[in-house]
Every structure is written in structure tokens, then in C-alpha cells.
Length: 357
Image (cartoon, rainbow, N blue to C red):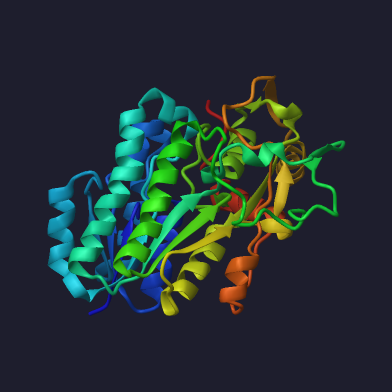
């Protein structure tokens, strides 16, 4: 028996990973205690996704409602499967800047402590299993805001002759900049994943994602950019834009493209690998531009308001480079761009995201 163990299995990337690795013939063990509902309220619950996975996959999927902070429960589960675990995909996290400030202890315990718990259990019970960690571009703090950005009509942009025009690479420093509380907890997790790779010779990868997205997102205001834009439009909610004149740029990568990268690493793992992984130049958009695209898809005008105060540590412009990952895994190809992603989100939720009576 070969087992893929997925933390955060009810979330966007976690659920996509469950389906993908089950499709490869692995038995999948999922860990998710629906903390997302505690973080963001009932509309952000992942319970519906867990039910769908259980119904679709049957005996190929085993679900466990375990908190990754619970060392005893986590250790018992790892011991149960032991060396049958062929890969560990760690997506569980507290994912919001804003929420982290409200409760820094929980944020750090989940993001940093939970990651350490996973790593140590892999070391003790299945040390040959590659560990795939969902990190974030927020480990670079607000350093991208120091780039020589040019203000255009609908977005901020880098000059074409800048070394990072095709995307920010992993050589950008993470030091001496503002990270936010959330960013700091994710830095701690990211560095620990690297350390277990180097110090203990484990196969580990940090994937520093930009905007990870797709139709399985339980989109809510504090997390799930593209999903929440579509939800706000479809349900006739007011969308609040925070700072930067609405010209902030994000790259966006579909969850299926993300897990295809995970599979590539699983098949040929390395130690202490670090990769930026995002939409890159292939798939990026500004706030102004995504509003126009959402309106085109639904035929409904966005309802919005502008708050000139940007979120602390928020990026004015982020387009990441996938160059390092593609150099190591040239067979990986990115499929989705932003218009494809938005239309898929719309079609998947057209009967669910309707205006409240």
C-alpha cells in the first residue's frame, strides 16, 4: 500500500491534491478539522468539500479530523501508516494577514508549530517520503514594494528591462523588510522545511505560491482573491478594495496546475528545494482588470468601495518566476490563465452563489 498523506485536505489545494494523487493510484489519508470555519465563519467551511471527496473517492480516501497542533494525535496517525506513506503534502495553514493580527499565538502555532509537527513525524515514521510544503510569496515580506514600479492606467508594472520583469525569482532577499504577523509565521515554517531537508537529508520542497485559486475555494473576504471577486459579483456583495488605487497586481495559478507541479516533485524529489510557483507572466491581473473581467463574465456591474489604507505588508505588485521549477522539471506545463480560471469559478458556483433574498 502506498499512501499520500494530505494535511488541509478539505481546502483548495488540499482537495485538489487528494483527487490528483488518488488518481495516480495512491490511497489518500486526509487531515482537516475545518479550522477555516473557525477562522472566517460558516461560509468558509470546508466540510462540503470533505463530503464530496468521501463520496467521490470511497475507500480510496480516509479522512481524519485532526488538528495539526495536536502532536499526540498526529503522531498516532503517522505511526499507523508508517513507511507506507509515500508522500506528505502539507497544505494546512492559517492563511490570512488580517486574521493573524487578531490571534498571533494561534497563527504561529498552526503555521510554524504545525509544520514542525508534520516534519518531525515524517522524520520518525517515513523519512523517505518527500514533503511538499505550501509556503507563500509573503515570505518575501514587503520587499517587492521597493521595486521601481511604474503606474499605468489599470495596473502597476515593472519596466521591461528590469531583471524581474518576467517574474520575481528566489534570489530576492527575505531579510530587513516588513512581513506581517502571518508572513513571519510562514517564514518560520518555510525555513524549518528547508532545515529538515538539509540537516536530516529529507526530501523537502517549499512552494512559495502567489494567488492559488480554483473552483474548490471556499471563498471569503479575508482569503480567496479571485473566488471572492466572483462571489461578491454573483451574490451582489460590496467588495472593498484596500489601497494602491486598485492597481495592485497578482499572478494567479489554478489548483490543478499546482498539484501537477507537486506530482513532478514527488516523482523526482530533491532535498531542501525552494520554488516560487504562480501564474507568472502567463496568468496575472490587477484589481481594476479583474473587476472588468468579472463584469464581462456575469453581465453584472461590481459593487465596490475603496479604502485608501492598504493592508500592512501587502504587495503592490507580485508576478513570480517559475523559471527555477521549470528548469528542474521541464515536463511541467502551466495550463490555466486568469480568464479561464474566472469562468470556471463562475460555472462551478452559478447555482450556489446567488443574491440573498
